[in-house]
Length: 275
Ligand SMILES: C[S@@+](CC[C@H](N)C(=O)[O-])C[C@H]1O[C@@H](n2cnc3c(N)ncnc32)[C@H](O)[C@@H]1O
Image 1 (cartoon, helix red, strand yellow):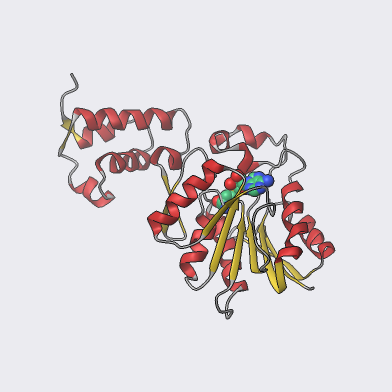
Image 2 (spheres, protein in one colour):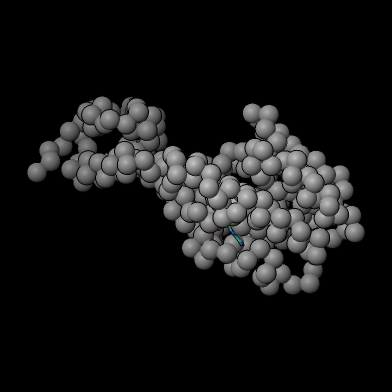
């Protein structure tokens, strides 16, 4: 039988980097980092040790920290995540910023997110603009279950629909804003078999084609669902900005421009529906 040992000893024995061992310790004990440090001579029970070791084994097998912990912070809020959804990325916060800017000054804007995954984008928009009517879609029922759980836990009010891009019951009313971070990795990109991506749902990562297929579906379908001067903001890959700008200009958008992220990479492209 495992004997109680001090918390400090359990953490020190971990082969994980110190900050990761601390995060797992915090998750197992349900405490803050400050508590963990201040109470490091407290004993941990056999059950806590076993739980720590189980999480540690998953991390050592390469599973992303966000899945092991079951949570990832996005725009200052904690979202539940699991293997059914993409782990929200920090750069996607720029998509939220782009969307918020696009509807600034508009009262009760109607917002649509396509491919919501964990719901991080749509839920954040709904919480940042409580007057907005937000609808979020995904083709994955499992992803939508996670998104609904996040909306409920964070007290966000928005609608969810399952279907293939615009092929859902959107009604006749048009939107002021459509946002999307669709799968944009090329089918045979070797990165799909490396690091965290190995554990994330393929459907969230790749369009199974040239990397622009899902972006084309989102861009080409947007005009039929946007009000005049409504905005489309999409996230895309580091080398896709020029192709997405061309796609949006051809589809009939005006003021098409791309925005760099903090690393100076153009990751978001937006435009206004001219019709
Ligand atoms: C890159 S993830 C984005 C998730 C989330 N919006 C984010 O930014 O963290 C793309 C999402 O699009 C969804 N998706 C893929 N193909 C789709 C389709 N044909 N119709 C609707 N959603 C789709 C995936 O299930 C996934 O949740």
